[in-house]
Amino acid sequence: MNGSYWKYPEGPLGGSERVLKGLKYPASTSSADGAQQPDARQVEQTSSAQHHEQQSTPGHDVFSTGRGDHAVVQVSWNDAQQYCAWRGARLPTEAEWEFAASGNSYVANDNKENMANKDGNAMGGSVVEPSMFPWGEKLYPNKTHRANIFQGTFPTINTAKDGFEFISPVDAFPPQNAYGLHNMIGNVWEWVSDWHTTQHVVSDVPLKNPTGPTSGTDKVKKGGSFLCHKSYCFRYRTAARFPSTADSGTYNIGFRCAKDIPAVDSFSEEL
Image 1: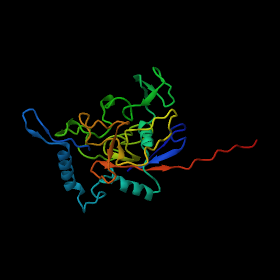
Image 2: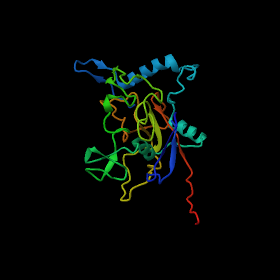
Image 3: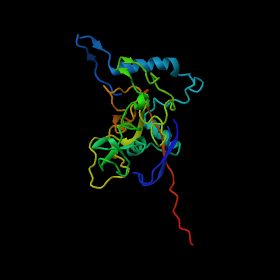
Image 4: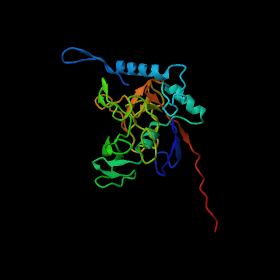
């Protein structure tokens, strides 16, 4: 986990400053000639087993093997939440996570080519939304890789053109947005605090830092992972989300912590 700060005077958190630390499985499919194709669960299990056998089995020290700069994985939402509390922090809300991931990169929703800021100042439209990716609208700006995702033919051939077949170091790629945050999308999924729902409350008043429902069966994870491919799991996007049970821990789920920074009291100087 790596730490990065971001600050925003008029964001959904009301001008506070925060600090962040830091599969879905289809059924087996058959080809046209009837040959059985491996499904994502089989590929994920095989890849993880091979990688764990080489580097991550009990008795292996992640620091002695040079992986102290890798994301923490195989951790459930329950454990992630407890760790954050131990650090005097917490998991970010989904709204906080998305705001951080956006990096203040917004586009007018009626003209994706025209950039806009969070105050709605944009040529071509006054209603804005976060860019598809933390850095903008193109996955490979200037033909460069900005995140660790699955390249090739999913799920059978991973060409690893981004340089990594499995998890990458947290600083393997440059910061993904103007806030200086790494790996907001790709590499490993990240738990957030919210319960998952698709029935969001509709309000005439813009909500500030909504926290989702008070209960549920699944928690939300964000950002996608090195196993995500557009043909199957196009969730390495700022707005994308996916549910998982709070006791799930897999090789491609991690987390980062958020912490409230006490606001500085304003004062006036007598003249």
